[in-house]
Every structure is written in C-alpha cells, then in structure tokens.
Image 1: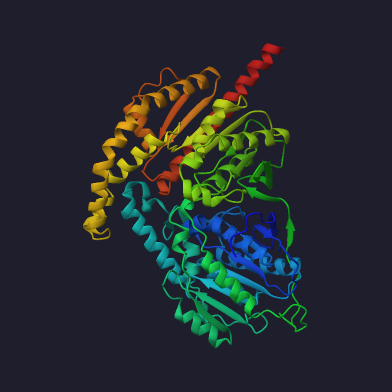
Image 2: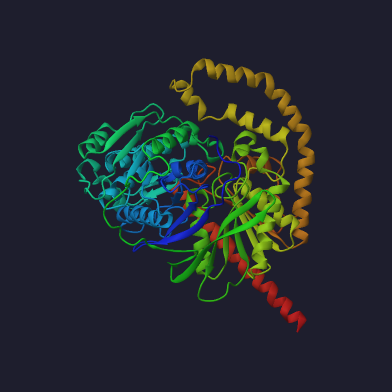
Length: 612
C-alpha cells in the first residue's frame, strides 16, 4: 500500500486532562472495521520531532486508510500544546498526555484494542504511561531507549557536537543557560526535566497486569538494534516481543524538506498490527477485561494563561484548490484584538511552530498583549494539504512561487473576514521571509514584513544554483571533515573536480542574470517605500542574501529606503538554533513588532484628526 493521495481530513482539537491541554489530530478510519486496532503515535523530541512531523502525518493517513483510526499529539511544552519546556513536572505531564490520549482514542473509536507507536522519547514516555495505567494493548517502539539517562546522554552529546560543528561557540554561550539545562538542536531540556528523565529506568517499572501490553514490536534504527535490556524486561513481564528492521529513521532528516516517509516500516508495522487481529465477524473477546476510567474532555479551542493574560488558541483551515491550509489562531480573551494582525509563515518546510518552536512563543506573547496572531502552514507543509514529496523533489524552486505568495494573501483574506482587522504584519524565516516580502509588495493591507534570514528576494534558478555550488565548495567547515576522514578523499576530489569544470560556467550565467534581479529588488523597495510599507531584515552571519546585499552596497546605503531597517543576529546558523541567537532574535523581533504597532496607531490618529 502506498501513501493515500486523498485522505480523510484530520480533525484538530485539544485534550484537556488534569495537566496541560494537549493539541491532537485525529484521523478517522476510511472504512468501518470494528476489530481493527486504533493507533496512537507518540512523537520524538526536538529536531527529530521537527523533521519527522510530515512523515508522521503520512503514517497516520496510511493507517487510517487501512481502517486503523489514528491519533497524533504534541507533548505538553512542545509543538502546539500548552506550556513551555521550562515548566516544572514535564515528565509526569508527558506520561499523563499518553494516558489521556489512549483513553480518549479508545472511547472515541469504540475499538477494543489500542496500540501505541513510540519514537525516541515518545517510546520512552509510552512505556512510562503504560506503567502509570495507560489503556494500551500493544506497543511499537522505534529508537526508544530502556533508560531515560541514555536519552539525556545522547541529547547532551548532540548539543556538544553541534557546538563544535556549527562553529558558533560564541553564539551558543552555554554559560548563559541555567545550570543543568541542555540546549540541543535549538530545543531545551530543563535541569529538572533532564534529572527526572535520568531517573527513569523502564526495566525497573513493573507493568500492572491490568495495563500490561500483550505484544510489543521493537524496530531497529537503521541497523542499530533495539535496546536489549528493554526487550528482556518486556519478555519478563509476559509480553510477546517481536523484533524487526527499522530502515528510514535517518531518512526523515536531517532537514524537514528532505524528510522521506519510511514506507517499508509503515508496511511492516501494519502487517504486525493485523496479524493478531480476529477475522471479520469473529466474536472472540479482545482487549481489556477491566473497566476504563473516563476519557478526558476534548474541545475545538483552548484557553491558556500566558504571561499575565489568558489567550485562546483555535485551529483553523483555509480552503484552496488543492485542499486546505491549516493554522493555529491565537487571540486575547479579555478584549477584542487591537492593532495589526500578525501572520507567522513557515520557516522553509518547518511546520507552523517555527524554528525551535519560536513562532509558538511569538504568537502567544503577542496574543497576550492583545494582538491576534496566526501561525500558518502553506501547501505541503505541516498539516496543510498538498504534495510534500514534491517539495523534497524540487526544493528549493518549488518554495519560491506565486502560488505560495497567494496562499499567504488568502490567509489575510480569511483573517479580515473573521473581523480581526484590516492591517497585517507578515513574518517568516527563509522562504517564509520571501512570501512575506512579496505579500507586502502586492497587498495594500500588509503594512510590514519582518524577514528572518531570507535566502533571496527574487528567485532566479541560475543565480541560486551558482551560489549554492560555490558556497558548498568553499564552505570552510567541510574541509576539516575531509581531513578527519569523515568524507572520503576520493569523494572530495570528485566534487572539487566537478566544481572546477562547472563553476566558471555557472558564475558567468549568474553574473549575466544579476543586473535584472538587482533592478527587481530596487523596484520592489521603491514601491514598498512609496506605499508606506515597513521592511525589517534580521540576518545571521554567513547568510547568502546578506552577503549579496553587502556586495551591492545596499545595506550600507539605505538612504533611498527609510522604510527599511537591518538587524544583525549573533551566530551563523540559518535556523537560529544557538541559544544566544534565539534570545537576540526574540528581543529584536518583539521590539520591531512593537514599533510597527505604535507606528500604525500614530497613522490612525492622524487619519482620525484629518477626517474630523
């Protein structure tokens, strides 16, 4: 079976257990098969979560097409769920989220069996939740450790490796983090959470007979076998354990636009789920003989305390020719939204939570200050419809299209129709900055665009190919890897030889194309100035567009465009992973947004005086 081309749309809602509200998406089964197992997908942590998000959506659609209703969710303090990673009690909240999700899924579907698929941290938490009484009959574990200490150690090693490879030691500044905190891939484990995970050992958890899974499937991780201690423990608890290959975990990264759904694993897990199911019409009892506790309440929107206010978040969809765009609208609850509406667009192929979950924090901060904010997925990204495989095949050209600019403007239309105002600020990173820039140029309602590390302002295939190849060959961080033997010398020589042949031709083509693009940039900046649109750039070091604009002396001669401002961020990581980069970007972004709110308020006051 291949991924479904026209799946049943998922329904988005919030589970409301005793702890933090949990954002969830339910995929209804395509066909009614009462004996088919319901499936709960428990996500991994951090960058693994970001890269595997779209493949997990594909997996849920695949299972639902095979008659297995499937639920996805975000752990509290991650994704679109409430809370932050600095909040206390994350580990018990994560376990409770699995308990609640499994209970809701069983009650909602009426299925007699529920299986959990746990990836990385998700597998660890699924097992902890089973020990805490989660209503789970079967479990699939992929890259799940037996001990939380192993997960913490691996996360800490990734953080240290990232410091070395990124060449951004000054931007990481680990001494600025509270003692015991871990900053890895742009994501945070607090000292309390790391300590709690370090104390978690699944082999010491006795599984109550009433909540012990009957079967478990352990998948290896691209040839690395599953944790033997976990297998031994499960078997000691009378769980029937199977082990199978798990190719494709690494293919879901290292970047979201490169993520490839692991179809072989999809098929193997489906086969395992169905091999123990009764034949249609059989009346053999399945599942638990014990009574289940009531499932948590669910709601189409959720209210949460942010700073000193209460905000509301609501999933919304926007109809498009190819299906629907998906987004989360954050609004104040104490009074109607005031000032411009903020629209946060994708950072490349990263879903609406933004790089390192920054868009969630931005949107909630501004909703708490009275500004309605939408974080949006465009076509084929996150939970919006569209062909994600096309992004993988044709990246980056497929990202820089008029169609995607039109989708951003469609979001502005929808927000205006909902009565959220007629002035908008658009923002995004990488291609999200490109869409924001052009939406501001084309739509009179967009008063400002805040562009974080935009790769380009106008797309030209010849220039971008030449620029990418030149930077790939000249990138200094690659050569130490060659010297350390991490890249075969023959491969390095082959790439260098190919570059010597092709780069002169590419550079000539790029040189011929640059005057036209330069004129297009000037024309757009002129129009934005003349229509009183503010443009603010936020650049890390080593950004190609920053380099290009500096070579053309635009950044040092902005006198023709007083509406343009440039901010410089510490570090040189495109997706703002270093700790100090995020802190600086947050501060600069919030100041820029505050300035735009005050500017528009002044414009409205002047207009009111003139009309009186």
